[in-house]
Image (cartoon, rainbow, N blue to C red; front, side):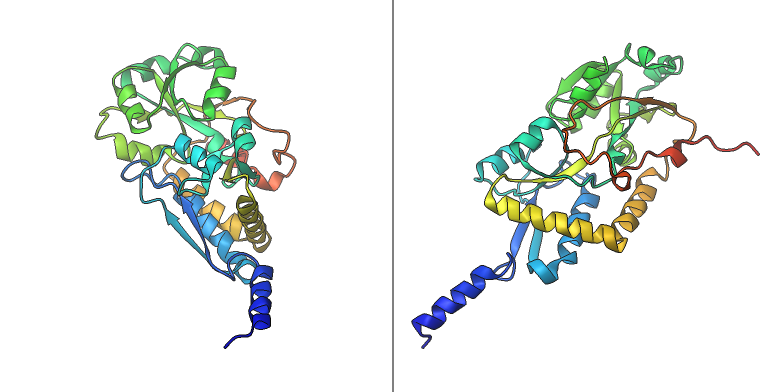
Length: 302
């Protein structure tokens, strides 16, 4: 039989080990919002790489998507209360979100999410072809989800917004003429067009404009002791990926994949400020930002 002293020593040893040695922590994230929705795949694969990078220090882990669909608003509420299943989300940051949850302030896609293109319909495209400036774009209505960070950015820039609480329904609203333009991330617009074109015939990507604003996507966890331990491990893992070159390799592969069928060169670029950035945003570290200068540069004529 194990003596009382031996039991105490064992408990002290387990308590001194980083989380994961005594028992693997499960990281549970929201599932895709619709069939074929792969907008967050890169981020969860990046998280898994970060956790694997410091397994030697923090121990084993598990990752899985929540078995039940969940809106972002509900996921945030669950993280705040600590009563839900989801314990991590990936989202474009905002002042409100950073107040409510614990951000890991590492831009996961180097700000690429802030490059926005328009989905539109043929009748609107004919009018859009006559536009050249921000003032011209303000004459068009723009659809957005009410919970997205873009709302504050576009509203601050003077755009006329039409808001909805859904995601898939936004594409149908565009097709029905409820608004003129649907601003989408360059990283997601191609996959969305493939998924929703059968539902919205005629929908296409505007070939002329690109909105660009600093909009980092972070991982967020709960503001709690457990959340703080998760944040410490995640940040350490991501910085290890940066030091090893793995972060850059993954980012460049992701960028090539999502931009491969988009012609960004020579577009009219409208740069907008982001009033939702906190003072702690790592804007002074150029490593974490891709300004797309090479991608936007017009091709040389032969």
